[in-house]
Structures are given as C-alpha cells and as structure tokens.
Length: 302
Length: 255
Ligand SMILES: Cc1cc2nc3c(=O)[nH]c(=O)nc-3n(C[C@H](O)[C@H](O)[C@H](O)COP(=O)(O)OP(=O)(O)OC[C@H]3O[C@@H](n4cnc5c(N)ncnc54)[C@H](O)[C@@H]3O)c2cc1C
Ligand SMILES: Cc1cc2nc3c(=O)[nH]c(=O)nc-3n(C[C@H](O)[C@H](O)[C@H](O)COP(=O)(O)O)c2cc1C
Ligand code: FES
Image (cartoon, rainbow over all chains, first blue to last red; front, side, top):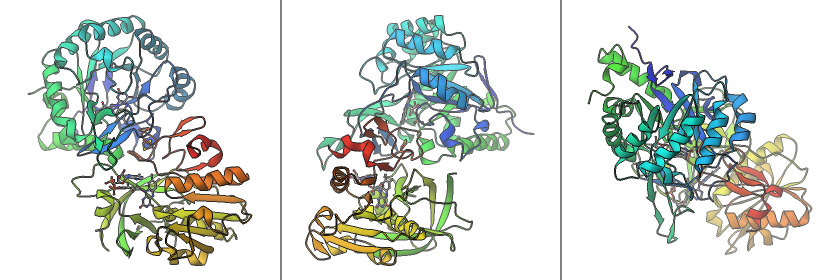
C-alpha cells in the first residue's frame, strides 16, 4: 500500500509535507527544468515588500563550513509588480503558492498582505518578521514578543486566509515569541529563518559580506533548528513548519518527529536542484520500510 | 532547457601548476551550448566545500558528446577538481546563463587568466559563421596563459605578458594591435582587465560584451546572491549574464 504523505497546515491541505523555503527557490519557475513542481507540497516564493527593493551591495554571499551566509537584503520586485507580472505566470502551478510577506513597518506589512489577500490562487502568506538582512524592521519585529504580536494582530485584520508567521532564531527564548504570535491570531508558525553570523577574509583583512553580518543557513544550522521546532511544537497548539538545513529525507524526518507538520527546504536547492523530490521519495521509502501508513503517525512523536 | 547530469572524465591536461582542463563525456546527445554559458560543477567528497562551483564551458564537441572545462586552481574546490582522473564522474548543472551574442564582422576576443576559458568555444562559434576573430590573451608570463595552442586554428592569436616572455610586454590594452579597427570586443578575465578593455570600447564607440565572474550560490537565478550593480539597478549575473553588454554597465566599468 502507498503510504499517505498528505498533511494539513490550518486550511492548507498539502500533498506531502515538503515545501520550499523563501528566497531559495525564486518563484519556482527557475526549477521547472529540473523537477515537476506539481510534486511539491508547496512553494514559498521570494520575500515581497511594498516597493521594489535593490537589496544590499555585492558581495552578498560567503560559503562557510556546511553552510553559507547571505545578505541579499530582500531584493524583490515589490508587491505591485508581483501581482501584475509574476502572479499571472505562476498562479497555475499545480501546488500551493505561498507569498513570503516582508516589510519595514506595520503599515507596509499590512499593505502587502492586503494586496496578496486579493489573489485568488494564493491560499496563504508567510509573514517574515525575521529577516536579519535589512536595517529597518525585519528581524526587529521578530525579536520582541509585544512587537511580534502587534504586527500579527494588524495583519490578521486585513488578511483572511492562512497566516503563517516565520520566526527568527536570533532570540533568547523562541517559545515566548511563538506564544505571542499564536495569541495574536497566527494560524501557523514556521521556523527558523537564518542565524545571524559573520565571516572574515583574513587575506584581505575585510568582512566577507558588504554588510559585515549576514544570515547563516544550510546543514550547519540543522541541530539548532530541530531543537527550536521541538520546543515550539510543545508550547503552541497551532501547526509548526520546520526548516533549517534540510537536505535529505532523514533531515526532514527529524523535524517531523520533533513536531513539525510540514518542512521547507532552502539552501539544499542550490546544491541539488532536485533535492525536494528526492526528499519526498525518501519519505515514502521510509514509511514503506517502517510500515507507516500515514506520515502523520510519526509527527511529533518525540 | 537546463539539466543536472553526470559526466565521465575522459581526458585531462595540465599547464604548469595552476591550470588544468577536463574533457567530460556524456552518453547522450548534448543540448546546444552558447559560447559564454557555464556549468555549476559539484565538488564531491570535500569537507570544506558546500556549494557548487561555476565554471565556463571551454569547448564543446557534438560528435563525441564531450564538454571541456579549463580551470585555474585558486582554492579548495578547484584544488579538489584537479584531482579528478579519467573514468571519474562529475555532476554538472548546465548550460546556464546568457552567452555571447556573436556580433561583429571583425571581432576581438580579449582574455586573461581563467577568463580565456570561454573564448575557445566563442572563437569556434565565430569560425562556424565564417568569421575568424582576433584573439588577444594576456598573463603575467608565458606559462600563465593556458591552453593557447588550442586557439591557434580558430583565429589570429596575439599575446601580452608582464615579463615579455610571450608576445608583447605589457597589458592587453597596450598591445600594438589592440586598436585595429575591430567592430566588436568580447572580454573575460580579471576585473581590472575587463574594465580597461570596456572603457576603451565605450570611448571608441565599439560594441563590447564582458563576461563577469561573481560569486554564486545557485547559478539559476533563485537566490539573488550574484548581482552586479548595473546602470539600472542590480542584475543577476547567473541568469541575465554572465555576459553583459558594456553599455548597461558603465557605472561598474568606471568604478
Ligand atoms: C560564470 C562564471 C564562470 C567561471 N568560469 C571559470 C572557468 O572557466 N575557469 C576557472 O578556473 N574559473 C572560473 N570561474 C571562477 C570560479 O568559479 C572560481 O575560481 C571558483 O569558484 C573558486 O573555487 P575554490 O573553491 O577553488 O575557491 P575558494 O576556496 O572558494 O576561494 C579561494 C579564493 O578564490 C576566490 N573566489 C571564489 N569564488 C570566486 C569567483 N566566483 N570568482 C572569483 N574569485 C573567486 C575567493 O574570494 C578566494 O579568495 C567562473 C566564475 C563564474 C561566476
Ligand atoms: C539566499 C537566501 C535568501 C533568503 N531570503 C529569504 C526571504 O526573502 N524571506 C525569508 O523569510 N527567508 C529567506 N531566507 C531564509 C530561508 O527561507 C530559510 O529560513 C533559511 O535559509 C534556513 O533554511 P535552510 O538552511 O534550509 O536554507 C533566505 C535564505 C537564503 C539562503
Ligand atoms: S547565483 Fe543564485 S541568483 Fe545567481
């Protein structure tokens, strides 16, 4: 018998728990030559802001052991161009397209969420209150429980569909933030965004990134992410989406067992553009091997 | 169409300590590869390397279904690639990016360092159109201009070296035939060289294309790590480039 891989995040019925992480999968189109996008549980597209943004100066990327630092700084076309030009191109993709909503003020978050709310084929947003690469706002909202609650409350008023809030690991107590956004009306939380980091080019005696600090991602952050997902999953009753360093089915299973209802794959897409489908196949193999009929049976078993 | 696929190393050649080339064979017919396009090459079993490495497609043989790469050893990934031998597998994501437009009736191709790599396929593509380009290769010394014998059948070859060990002494822009009535220039190499070549072209009103080598993570336009500041904002080098027209990059060129 085929194992059942479908899971649910609030009103979102996913074919399987494997989605893609914002900022690592473009608008999905970039990967269409390599995989059948219709196999994915969902695609979270690039962080979208009120206006077009140029992002930070080059260099914006530095490779690190088992990971990378980025300081892209939310370069994106802005919500108007997203709605007019990108959305018509991607809306018929045979999976859930979720927009990662970013901003520097509560007004901006609300304006973007309000526009996206009108798009029929976008069933959910992921509110990014956790970007470490912008000077104003971004992570600022995600590091204080009262600020996080304020943004979520405000967005909740203008956004009626599934509202996922993406949390930053750059806090002392992530549980406190997760509880605050749950109370403010979030339907789900996803974690983790990148870990604030830094690297130095010792030959040139300069920071590797134009912004000095940047966001760390990739396999090196996985244990930290699994720990945080486990903590949050035990503290809130809304579904948790886990991410951070997932490259294989075994990695994804760690998150599911720790309590994630779904996962997102980020940096691994750069190393292997077919990583997501390999993970989906691997989950199925695992279920067959362990006689698991329904993947939900192993979610949160730890 | 882009592919992710394994090739088998069927040939290896080295020039001095720093340059080597790999010839890679595929069991199936190769897709069309434009001159200037590149591959994201997997570096296997190397603890220190996480991401793929972008490497230009140096040569294409559609009869034998082979591609060649010409690589300069500059760090951990390229050093690991240098250990590959005949029979080994190499995984590529390719062909990526936008290549050269093959403009001009009297083109000049200017390369330096590892930047000579894409110029071989480019020279062959011009020849296939009945145009023999002038190819100007520069380096610090003769042994730092790799693979030059491969270019000989496909154009008029000129050299400059810092020490005068091959061709004329000096920089590529100082070569006596640098300004010889060309109607198009293609350049790939160290940033100061490309800037000098492109400044000259812009001043003389000659059309010019440059191939940039920004650091990349994905190579397919998904991460926006590889951008160059063009005259109308950040542009993605891996997808909108790596080959750009000089006219849109005047700020970058005059930096
Ligand atoms: C489109 C494109 C085509 C390229 N084609 C070729 C080619 O045909 N042959 C070739 O030899 N090289 C080519 N390069 C450059 C090549 O990608 C880098 O030299 C390589 O990634 C370095 O890897 P490494 O692990 O050996 O170096 P690392 O150990 O990662 O770094 C060693 C040093 O090299 C520098 N470096 C790292 N990446 C780059 C880069 N992308 N560009 C310049 N310097 C870098 C680092 O700053 C560091 O100082 C190309 C780059 C691009 C973007
Ligand atoms: C290049 C890059 C760009 C990113 N852009 C965004 C973004 O726009 N919005 C966001 O919420 N997260 C962004 N992220 C964070 C990822 O979505 C993810 O949370 C993080 O990389 C951890 O997952 P990973 O280790 O699987 O990559 C970005 C990450 C990278 C590497
Ligand atoms: S390297 Fe990812 S967009 Fe160019």
